[in-house]
Every structure is written in C-alpha cells, then in structure tokens.
Length: 316
Image (tube, rainbow, N blue to C red):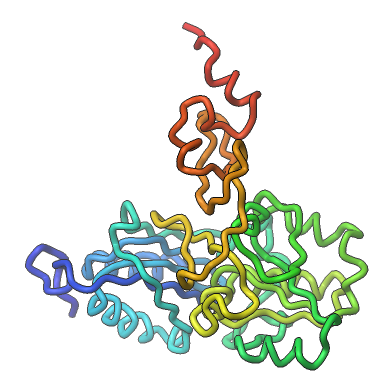
C-alpha cells in the first residue's frame, strides 16, 4: 500500500526532479477505473502533470522526484496492458505543471473522431506504420536516399520552431486539421515514397500513420519514441534541427547548446524560439515573439486586427 502524499513523504520533499513522458495503446475495458487509480497513485507520490485515459490506452506526462517517478513506473506496470510501456525521461520538475490532472477522454490524441479511424489490440495500433529506432532512420535514408521523406505529424507552429531536415510540414493549426489535409491531393506525389512520420513522443504518429495507410500511402514509418528518443541519441548532431515544443511550463526544449534557432519573431524578425499566446483574450493563436516584443504591450498580438480589437472600449 502506498503512503499518503504529504510533506513528510521522502519523495514529496524536493530531491532530484525529472519529467516522465509515455503512452501505450492497448484495449482498456474500464477507462474510468483506470483514471481513478492513476489519480490516487499520482497524488500519493506528489506528482504533477497530465494523463489521458481512453478505451484505446494511456497517455501521460508527469513530473516529480526521481524516486517517486520510479515508484510510479513500478505501480503502473502492474496493469498487464502497461507492462511494456516505453518511458522517456526529460529535464524538468513537478513545478512545470500547475496541478495533477487525470481525465477520461474519447480520444488519446485530439484528432477529430480519430478513434473511429483505427483500432488497437494488445500489441498496439492495428495496421499502423512500421516503427523505426533512431539508428534505423539513418539506415533507411542511407539505403533509399531521396525516396525517403520526413512527414511532420505535429501542428505547423511546432514545426516553425524545429523539424527534421527537408521535412514535409502540413498546414495544420490543430490536430483536428490532419484528416482534411490527408484527404486533399497535396501529398499525392509522396504516396509511393517511404514516408517517416514523426511527432514529439510518438503518440500522434501512431494514429497519423494508420490514417495515412488508409488513404493510399504505400510505405509508412514512424520514429519509435518520437523526436524525444531521437534527440536523446543524436542530440543536434543528426537530422533534427531547432527547438522542440513541449506541453508544460518549459514551452520548448533543446537537445544541446549547439541547437539551431529556426524561428523568427513575428514582428521584428529576430531569431528566437520563444512563443506566446496572442494577448487578445478571444484569440487562442500561438505567435512566435522575441522576448523584447513579448514584453511590449503593443506587440503582444498575432495581428493588427487583434491589437485593435483588444484596445477597443468594452461595452458597459
């Protein structure tokens, strides 16, 4: 039985902190029960982060003391469907998250009705892309050269900060845009090539690769563990360039001090990997802003339209 969370718990006191990223596609008969179990477990260990549970599996990012995270892994692996989860460690702490959130959702990834696009068994997504370890990505390119294409499975603003060299970047503002993108004729010229899909930790590409195969892409792959695992192995000495968007208080991360800065400030064009939410309250667009422009009240907007709207007198 796990001790209760509290200041007296050894792992609740601030020791060496890390962030743990993971997902697992596996059939879950009672997602609500898994949600409640995970919430009690995380609270007892003093963790913070976000976990989603659906009938298709588990997707989480949690931060805390290393000993607490190791206990979390040990307990989570006791559920048969989670025993072979691939765990990814990243720099950070529980303070990168405001709270511990565990939710039961229809979809593990926020595609529009994507849970109708695929099914899972105890081995993962059925008829998804072929998994490649980071070194196998290089071997595939060495063997087939220009017949290999990287396909970014993230939103376009993430690719603005960092991407694989010469990657195809779909015009997507949110994950919900992907189905329409794939059903367009924009990518007909790469359907016969060897397409390596990639995303932050791998989960989005589990779904995207299955959707691509259903829409005529002949030879689809995905990077096992996503950009995070690739960066762990090659840092900035491989085919990845720039900063990686992460979904916690850090906002972005790089794999070394040699990382390139790909993005430019929306207003002054200075090189930066910083981004902010548009300051107009009704606009949820993310905009790349250097620190100077981000601190300027007149420039914290994605457009002149939003700036004018925000400065307009409010109705009584």
